[in-house]
Image 1 (cartoon, rainbow, N blue to C red):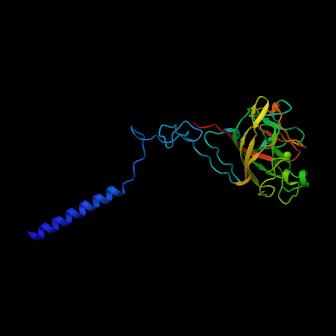
Image 2 (image 1 turned 90 degrees about the horizontal axis):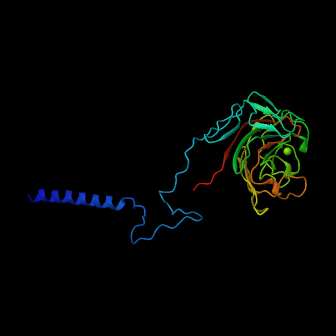
Image 3 (image 1 turned 45 degrees about the vertical axis):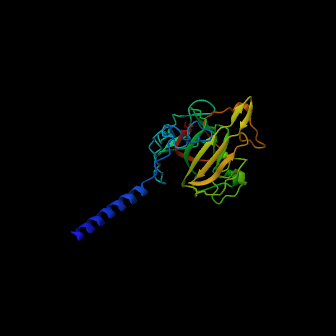
Length: 276
Ligand code: MG
């Protein structure tokens, strides 16, 4: 009888100890404001308390896929597709009328002498993806080798150039904010290969005819950071840039005809909208 009791005691102690350990190792419930307790602090520059479950959830989208040299990737589900390989219906000539660049085999190519083309739609803050390919074999030197450009808001040029073994002034090579900021590195692929730009751009903010916050741009070329939240000093010009109120806060995306046979494919933008 004594032996049975000691076994029972041992079992009870084991169960009680296990229960106590389990209780102690439970996750701590998240802090909640209730009567007599202090409310969670507000997020900086927001009306929402830290960790507030009532804060609106971010929009759910489907991500895209990456491109290969052979095949363009798919855009994210909320992207505005500006060129999907078929036609230039979202574009127009800056001289007026339809865009006259050549569309074939899933890309379009600059038609030298026809002038720049621009999107019909105007944009403010955007994420932009586009792919470009320099003509092969390369010919010309410095700025004369495969020159084109991506003009954000129609005014600020991110340079497109064959900068693979082609020396030019640093603030004019591929990945540069033309005339303002050289790229952080030269990450160019050889001519004949597709290259990518992934760009985040925010226009300048104006108040009473003055810029209170300048435009900024971040650029990844072939997945490598080449412009890191670079301050744009004004529209692209050949001398000292300065802001002009005519620039405003929205504009089209423009591609440059600089007489080179540059090809483009897989172009899409996402409008950047602030979350609550
Ligand atoms: Mg250019």
